[in-house]
Amino acid sequence: MFLGRTDSMAHNCDWNLYTEALRGVDTLAVHVWHWIESTPGWAGQTTLFITADHGRHLTDWCNHGDGCVGCRQIPLIALGPDFVQGVEASAPWGEQRDLCETAALLLGIPAPHSEERVLWEIFSNPENAPPLPAGGALRLFASPVPASSQVVASLPGAAAGDWLAS
Image (cartoon, rainbow, N blue to C red; front, side, top):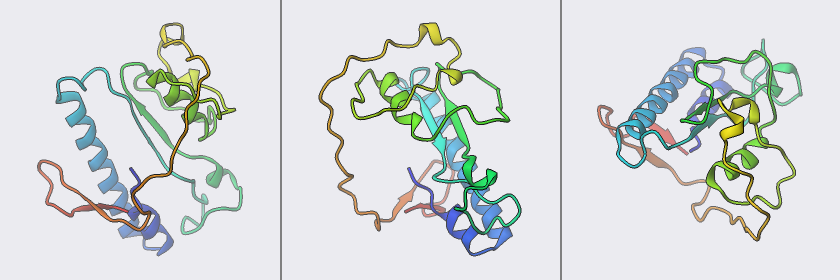
C-alpha cells in the first residue's frame, strides 16, 4: 500500500496539508489494524509492516535525497504477534531492503535473490521465529496494476474517497 499524499503535500511545502496527510495515514493504519485484529482468521496471526520509501531532511522537510541523517532514517512500524510491543528505537536497526528477507521468513517462503538479513531485532522471541526456508525457485513479477492507477480506500466510519492511495 503506497500512500502518496504525504509525499506530495511535503513536496508542495505546505505544512498544514502535510501534517493533515500524516494524520490521515495514521487514521487509515489504525482502521486497517483494527479490522485485522477483529476479523477471524486474521486476528492474532497477521503481520503488518508500515514504512515509507524515504526519509526527509531534518530542517528542510520539503526535500529529500542527499543522504543526510534525516533522509537515511526511514520509519518502520511492525505490528503482529511475533514482534516486540511498545518499543521505539532511536537508532536504525537495519535497512529497508531487509524487509524482504524478514517478510519471506514470516511467510515461510524462500527469497533466493535477497542478499539481505532478517530483522531479528524486532522479534519478541527470535528463538521461536519460524525457521528460515530452504532456497528454492521463487520469481517475483511486477504488479499488473499500473503505477498511475488511483485506488479509493473505503473504511467503516470513513467517507469514501477520504484517503487516496496512488
